Image (cartoon, rainbow, N blue to C red):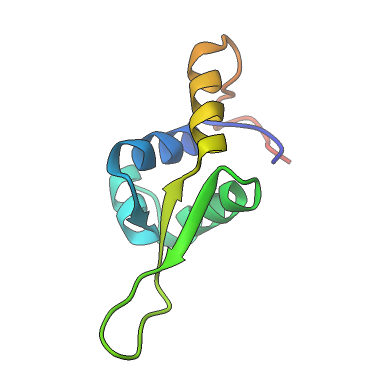
Length: 95
């Protein structure tokens, strides 16, 4: 993952406090679009900072997923929150 901006840190912080949430719930909390939220969630998941599982609804199941912070995610969040300059402004290009 290129950089950690305020939005990525907000996603990690929200999931730390909630335990787990859907992309829609994260989007509503952060006030950004579900599409944008899904992009952040996938990047954090691919980096090993978030885990995910399918949310079961009814007999057929569901394609919806819930995300949760992993042990690596907790460690990274703690580091980001305590290291000066580790979090870049969301206005900075992330690459």
